[in-house]
Figure (spheres, rainbow over the protein chains, first blue to last red):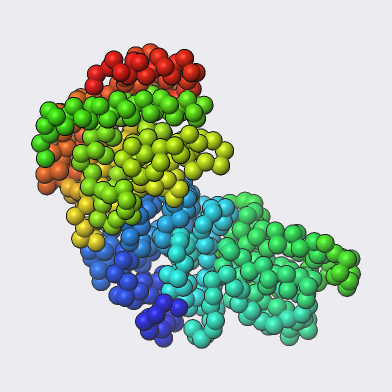
Length: 336
Length: 278
């Protein structure tokens, strides 16, 4: 953790993911004079404006110009500042895609991207404002660390922890209305290390972002109603992914389901599948998210229900995968 | 910082040497953006040998002036200038474009000493230069940021996003140049995508504009002297240039945007440079 930061999310019930981000950033800016903030006419919507109110000479609104936003941030990082750049994740990953990749990731600059309105969290806004491809896109950028916090508490922890990474970090959060997953900040958050939120041996649920808290609820229901022992991994870091936790899950439970507010192509599910496939070990596996289509319009909770990434959907999918037959071979030695 | 006749003579001699080196590297590389590199040589020479505050022995010196080659495909010219300025052994350029070399045709700042920004994709350099100039202000540093753009590059929308921001923030520590050689890969700039009235566009975006002959050292010096003392905002120096300048068979030829040179052509090219002015 960054030394000297004492602020805690004591009134998290009243603070959304985005508000937490703004508060933590101000706190960090107090002890790191090299922190500057940038946005593209979304200072209010992304809550990075909180930094601007406190440190007006360290906040820059470049207008509705996302390409320039990331180029300017790169230039500032090049002269020794630590820019925090905030815009909607659809624009960070797509409108400004090449500027993020070429100016920031290729040059390996110490720049932090806080991409808000991730996934379908801006549901009624429609496809132009949904961000269901960003993880797939940014995961392919070398040098970039990719984090998807589960809630406001984890957002606070991510924003602090990203200061320890000497390079670019992409933190994808929601719109700010997401329910919380954690009770307190009293848990071990380490970039690249999954958090085990439920101990289990029958099946492993791996999730990131909003679906994490649904997975925790689903695990309780499955324990009560089906007697199932469900392991829940909060895979808050998509890159570098916690390979060891995935391999343990393969070995211990042999059934894995992933849930993400993202297209099933290229995001969390694909990252987990890569690790499973490379292990050479047999495992019943399913990835759940948007099935390669543009999401329906609706409130986020309705969209999550529609695509089975809410509690009900997770329960249903876990039951389905428990019924799936696959060759069970307890001899791990003969597998590649 | 007025320029003397003696300095002009020295800079012209340097530019001749740099142009010949560009020809050599193009030969070693098996091909390079030679036409592009030759049109910007005089701008680069006067910046690196007269105006930029830098120290090749301390490439990371925090207070140095920054230079961004927004037209990153001028990399071969940039590399030769940096080698001549003492950032690295010119012998290294024998590996230019070769497999495993630190030198690709668009220079990587994490591999090549003296390169302040990695560029190549057009429309990226000016936004980064704006960030550097803003960063200097935040850090209360006195260094200036110089940015060299291509004319064709100004088709990119991001250039105009950055142009707006530079004026909005009144970046009087930012000095832009446009290598106005009137040619892009597919032909004349005015035929492919009209830029004129080009100076008016920059003026309308709030920049102070100076249009000069980009091969005339007295005009270059006067424009840079003006830009360094102008306090109202950013200055754009539109430098009228000739693509392939100095090599008679390349001048104003679209075909020499990128090309390779046989041993015979290398000799012919160098002889042409020797005869040329400046």
